[in-house]
Length: 452
Image (cartoon, rainbow, N blue to C red):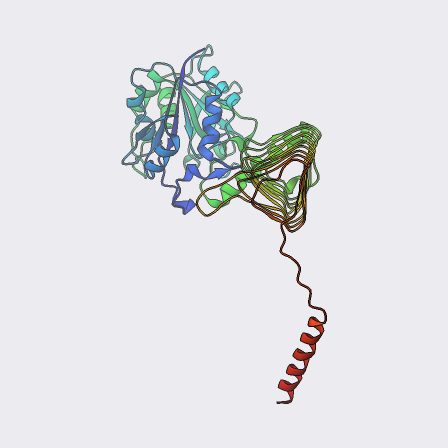
C-alpha cells in the first residue's frame, strides 16, 4: 500500500453561513460536516492528516483534538497558498497528497482511492483532478480532457471560450499529487489575477506547459462534490444525506411507512423487518434490532431497542435507554438511563429515569421514578413481574421486589419486598352532603351578585 497524506482545507471564514460556529462544524445527520469527510479519509488509513485552519481555529482545534494536526493560513491568499501551509507539518513526507475541502463532506472513500490510483498509472500524471458533470454546469471552471481523462487545459468559466463552456466536465477543486511534484509546482504559482491570490488549479496548467500529463477522474455522482456555504446549502446537504440513508435502510429490509418524514443520524443501526411509522427522529447512538416497531412521532437518542420491541407512538427514548426483547413503551412514555426487561411494558404517560425494570413487569399509566433531589440522581429497581399501579411515584433510591404490587396512587419511598402489596395513600375523608351544600351556597352568592 502506498502511503498518502490528506490535506483538508478549512481556513475560510464562512461568512455566508452567518454563524458563530465554524462552518465545517455545522452538523449533518448529527455529525459535523468535517467529520463526515474525516471518516471517509480514515477508511483509507492515511499516514498523515493535516487540516489548514484560519478564522475560528480554536473551535476547530478543540473539535479535532488529536485526530489530525493543524496549520494556520494567515493571511489567506488563495487555495494554492492554503495547501502550501501543510508542507511544514508534513516535513519530509514523500508519498501522495490528497487535497480535500472541509465543506465538501460527502466524498466517498472509493473516489479518493480512484484519484490516488490514477497518480500511479503508466502516464504518471503530475496531478489528478476530481471532475464532475452536473446537470447544469453553471459557472464552474471547466476541465478540457480527452476520453482517457488526460487534461489539455483547465479554464475558469469567465475566461472560457464558447466551445470550452460547452464542455460539461467541471472542476470540483479536489486534487491528488505526489508530494515532490505538489510542492515544486506550488512554488511556481503566481498571483497575477484580479484577486491577487494563489490558486491551486494553476499547478495543472503549469505542469501541462512543462509537457507533463495531468489527468481527471470523474465521479459518477455530482452530489458527492457539493460544497456547503450557506444555511440553505446545509439544508440541501441534510436532505441529500437523509434520502440516501432512507433508501439504504429500505434496501436492507426495513419498512418506512412515509420515508420522507423519517430522519436518521449518521450512526443509526436498523435491523431487518423493522417497521418505522411516520415522523420518527433518530438522534445519535441508536440501535434497533430485528422485528422492532417504531411508531409515529417518536424520538430516540442514545438508545438500544431489542428484537420485537414496540416504541410509541409519541415516545421518547433518551441516552442510556435499553429495551430488551419484546418490551414495549407506549404513548407519552419517556426513558432515560433505564433498562426495560424482556417483555416488560410501560404503555402510557410514564417516566423511567435511572431505573431497571425486570422481565414481565407492568408499569401503570402516570408512573414516575423520582430520581433527582436537586443535587444527585438515585436509582429505582423494579423486580420481574412486578405490577406498578397507575399514578404511582417511586421515590429513589428504592427497590420493588419480584411479583410485588404497588397500589395505584402510591408514593413509595421504602423498599417493597418480593410478593408484597404496598399501598401508600392518605385516609379518605367522607362528608356526606357537603358538596350539595357548597353548590347551593355558591349559587345563591352568585345570584345575589348579579342582582346587585
